[in-house]
Image 1 (cartoon, rainbow, N blue to C red):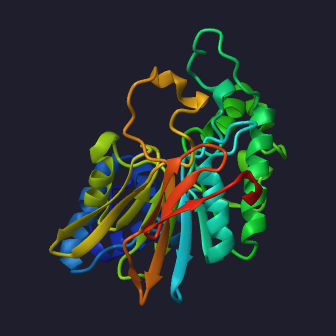
Image 2: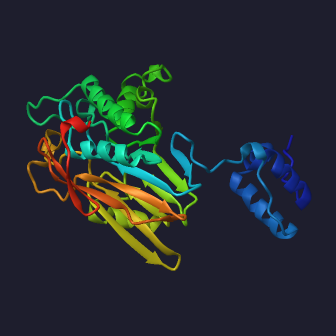
Image 3: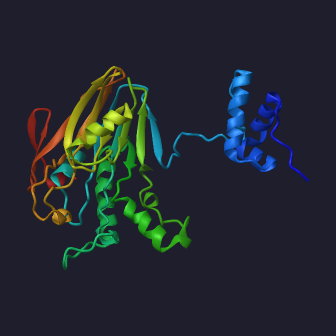
Length: 328
């Protein structure tokens, strides 16, 4: 028995398309899905209106909360944001001590740690450098717990976000690859280890004069990565990963937007980075305070680390400040 043909009546076609969709019509009438879309276009031209897809097939284009968290600006706001701490065991960097000190002083509305808090050296896909001793996952997790507890204690009322970096992702990726049968088992995800923090791949801040996207990786790398990200995104961007620290305005017909790179909260010459083979690094140790005033994102106030010894020094608002291990 021959299959019926696609409806030639435009209204009948539109009603059926809105009921079962393109794939459903292709299956019912034994035609290719491209033929269905071609017929839909002809019907829309004839009817002078668009033909919607079924509600149950319409996709929500907003990324899942596990991918993107959204923060709404409803008043003047301060955001203390750092990146790429690569926390080591038995080591506390000047940048971390300064971060804790300023969190305590400023009591920011929001604290964001923009990825690579965990280094994940022992679960890296890269081979060890000779006979180097790498910390265990347990040791690294303990170090991260200690550092984050210091931040939480310094500013307990701040809303806290952890934007995942590529090193952080090693935790879940290693387990998912080796033990896929354990999907959903409590404790097999990094975010479950740190319930005081809101995890995502990006943080989208809306309500300012234009949106702000905080995301670990810029598009591409190198010294042009931040500019490229801002150019392509059309919004203010805040990124880490490169360990550069800078703010570059980009102005076009839509106005001015900022491309902000945060630097690293690690010490650029710590053992974690021995893979660089003692080459010069265009890295800056530090972090930034973002302020939104009257719905405008102001230029970031950078903290830049000057020395990494026990009572290290950092630059902040035109002054040199000292920290000590007692600040954590």
